[in-house]
Length: 207
Image 1: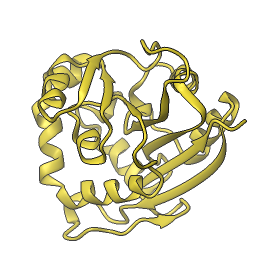
Image 2: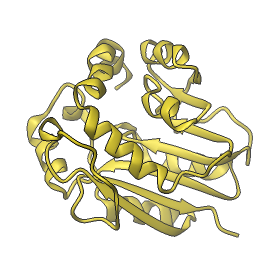
Image 3: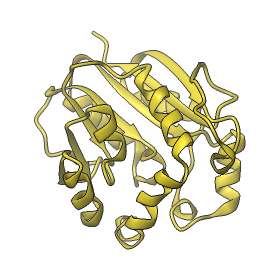
Image 4: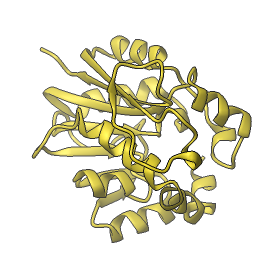
C-alpha cells in the first residue's frame, strides 16, 4: 500500500487544496474531540495535512515521499507502521488515526498498538469515511488509485474493534452531507453518526 502513496503523493496532497471545504469540515469535526495542549501521535500522518493544522507534533507513516512533505510542514514525522509502533508504553495523551484504518493490513493490531502507547485515561481519535454512508458507497464505486485498495469500515465495525481492544467512553461527530467537490462552504459537525460521510470516533483508555 505504501507504494501507491509513494507514487501518487502529490496527487494525494493536492486533493486537500481542491476540496478545501471538505478538509476544513473534517478538521472541525476532529477538533470537537481532540485534547488540547496534550502530547499526540498520528498514525498514518501522510503529508502532515491534519497534523500540521491540529497541532499534532509527532507522526508515523510508511511512505517516504509523504514524510518529506510532513516534515516540511513542521511535523516530527518518521518512517513506521501502525502495526508495530516504535515508541515505549504509555507515552502519548492521545493517538489520531485519520483516514488510515481502511488502508492498514491489520486494523485490530493497529488499535492494540495505539492502546499500548497511550497513557492511562488517554484518548484515541479515529476519522473514517463510513462504509455505510453515501460517501463511503461513492468511494467504493469510484475505485480511485487509493480507494480501490482500501477496505472500508463502518462506524459500528470500528466501534466493535475498539471495544475488543479495551477502549470505552465513546463519542461521535459527523460531517460532509454532500460530495466534497460540491461543497462551497464549511459544514459544521454534528453529534452522532448515520448521516455524515465523514465520522470521528473518540474513545478512552479507561481505568
